Length: 398
Image (tube, rainbow, N blue to C red):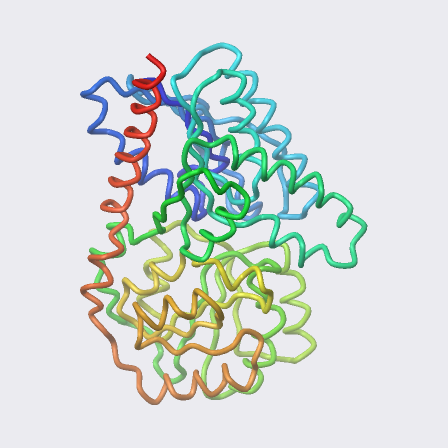
């Protein structure tokens, strides 16, 4: 079986999609003995303009070939990301014209990779397996409110419907996405394969050493975009907690400048912002943290998602501060009951949650959580499902 994998991000790039796909590629490895060959088409590291990482244009491991395309640089704006993605799509089509595969697997958060996968699969006349990590149309409906770009939504929904309906099967990272998939493509089977905990987090103790303990340290690591809404709550809460706690925000994104401006307006001096760091360095920041923090903006679309950061944080055993609602809040209640949850953008509720956590900073082993959401286990099941679905299609077509 020859499988084409499309993923806009792949390691050593820093993103939830790149880590998920690295784990999936690792899970494919045992199938090489049964004749599996994989071509992965991705990009040179480009997730954050402020973090440069090098990776070869082609990695040839015999059964696995990783093609990395050079795309235009971007700073997480909509227009520059669109230009960058156009470069990726052109590169994929160029490589696809030179070869053939038995199936296409595409992982997609911003929908376009799903649409590209559907286009390539139709052109090759082979089955398509989609891995959906976000509901792009829901996000855009709210984020584009009042914008002239809202006129693009009918075309975007058409891409979504065509892509989903053309799939042989769809996997999603959140149970909250299932109803949306069923409404768009009721005849396509859907299964949940969440993100998970990579071995590097399970094998680290995260004991705090050598750090000034006068003020508890609250650490956030990840994207700083509209979806996270940090600029709308952290400056105000940090000001309230002056002299009680300090914040360390690690990452980059389209709203980082707005966050910095808001911090300047509120004169919150207990917040430091650091650029994205490699995972090895991130582990050190987690060790130094007293509380790990995540937040989603107060939009209906984000009540269906399941942030990948939840799994990293949970693996550390450290107190978690989560500004989430809807399904992610339900997930936390069921799987991380010791976490402090507050309503997104509720400054008073977040301040109260920080104070409660500071006064009761107990760690938790979370043994069952780490076992249940071990990434390698989850990806082994996804890899087997992909092979089974494609194999069944080949048998039926024979």
